[in-house]
Image (spheres, rainbow, N blue to C red):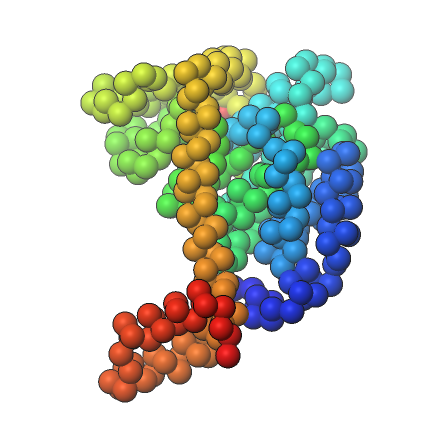
Amino acid sequence: MESNSYNDATPKSRLGGASHHAIINLVSRLRQGDTRALARAISLVENDAPVAPVLLSACFPSTGRALRIGITGAPGAGKSTLVDRLARVFHGTPELPQNNKTVGVIAVDPTSPFTGGALLGDRIRFQNYHGDPGFYARSMATRGSLGGLALSTADVALVLEASGKDVILIETVGVGQDEIEIARLADITLVVLVPGMGDDVQSLKAGVMEIADIFVVNKSDREGADRVEQEVRALQSLASDHPAHTPPVVRTTATTGDGIETLATAIDQMQQWLLQENRLSKRRAQHWQRRLDAMLRTELMRRARQNGFDANVLQFHAARIASGQQDPWQLVAQLTEKVFSGNST
Ligand SMILES: Nc1nc2c(ncn2[C@@H]2O[C@H](COP(=O)(O)OP(=O)(O)O)[C@@H](O)[C@H]2O)c(=O)[nH]1
Ligand SMILES: [Mg+2]
């Protein structure tokens, strides 16, 4: 799971054989709309290649303008279908250009990395955009490595932003902490519910409820949409976490497109709200605070591994600790000292 290349600290291997110049060149191509360069850069970042930090820093100055929208919900709730509809609203289609915004999509579904219906579905749904530089969709295939899924999704989003996309849609399966972290990358988070979950709304993870800016009741063509809506409203009236903003509940039928315009309007209103009183900046600063923390932890662990704190060494020490020959607290203090002094002997 972890990248072993981190163990080798020579400058060449840190760049994975690619020169600094080649990476800068790659970034300048992706910024100009070269889709192949974009795909390559995303792969490097997603695989946690040693060049990733150089690449990301080269991308960073071209970011910050895109609107990032997270779409989270249970498997099969219709997230991908919604993402497809939203992409059409933002980007338009060749027949119906509409807003003409450029759109990037990241689909994160760790439960079905390669063979999942979602990925196949995405390919089919998005194929009419092939060759259009204003649209790019990518499924995250891995769990991410050293820094975890949330961090690698954040990095992929950054690269997509640098390619000049106006809107970035991030689809995640809203189950665990990882997914909540991913949703927190977004400026605006949609939580997708479906009829039939009825009382289950109450069992939704507290974290998922907290991150919702907009509730979408999808599959509203099915019976029970009003029930789900009532459940959400009931929960909202109990919770006072959102004094300034009560997330609206929007009903959709993603398969037919019913309610999508209403949803797009709700997103637009949310964006307007965020632009008032510096709310968006504050939200992004909070995001960066969490991300910095994660980046720092990743880098410290990388340095620790470089300094000999790899799996074998760990195993060796663990055996000694277990048999009482070594004190783990002293060991950790010594190893940390070693990392900070940069002494890798
Ligand atoms: N009846 C109905 N089916 C839907 C709706 N939205 C999506 N679906 C179907 O639900 C299934 C799962 O959709 P998908 O978008 O892949 O869900 P995801 O796993 O949340 O991404 C597919 O067969 C969709 O066609 C809807 O509004 N109504
Ligand atoms: Mg999906």
